[in-house]
Length: 375
Image 1 (cartoon, rainbow, N blue to C red):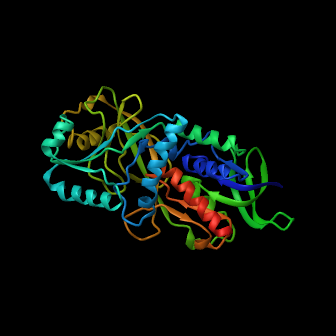
Image 2: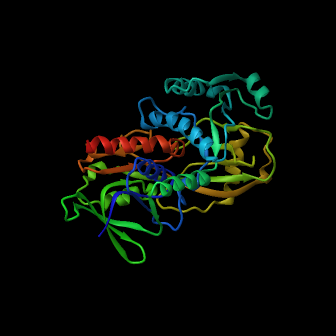
Image 3: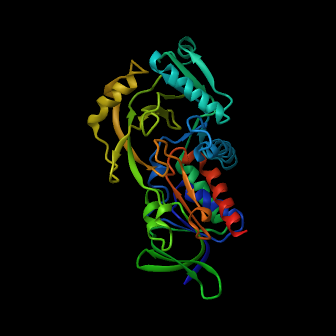
């Protein structure tokens, strides 16, 4: 068998961040990715927003990891030359009926330690963004946008510069707790590539994203009670084939399963709108152009002058939602030996937004989890 100290399953932004952290600590790391390139799923199909940490319930993992992740990510981008813009965000209340909900978001953000939020009246909002027609807004100056592909390339560079390796087109199909024949406990892993490869790994981090539960179900001895039920929320995006009168992000009130159809900008200033929320059973990235009417209605609630003819179907992403806690909030789940009893194994489930923002903080959390279990 080939042997490795740490096997990281999944080469999205979180898997690469975890691998980079472990390699930086001097660990021998192999990243295996089922697709033929890094970050082709959730990491490449999102709004590329650096979130401030506003929306998440107090004491949730999302609340705990978003702010430190945000700060670490800005620092990392400056050090590595990863393109980003700290453009800020307006969360808007389209009508007076939304004011209470807007105030609740402000309170939640302040509880999470986001201390730079500013409440804007209708007049102040209009002064900040004259094209908006809303009753009030929250200004978040630390929200930003990032080039997620360049971030993943930088993280992969860190992995490889510290001796780590990446294997593409390598799908984990079976994991059995065992030993290497020399008294070392770990996991015997079957990887499907051109044929099949058997790897012995002392520790495993399951960062497989949309495939994380499938990987977990193939780990022998893992209690099924520690594998959460999940569902898929598909989100479509429409680009806008004209300049927009905004230099920041515009978010409406959150919707079930998401943050509403919002306006984001790419590094060149091109606007896109989305995602919506469509609960689906399968991964399908097609975008229906006929949804332009739905998007126009949602956007015009805060930007009345939108030109519907400029909306063009663009791309979609799938967000994985966990249902481990029996409520409407879908938190990250990072399940280590304390939860499932298997030493040297960490499973990550439901890593959706703000997973991109939190990736470096998640990596630190995983490294601590593994260290505490081994010590």
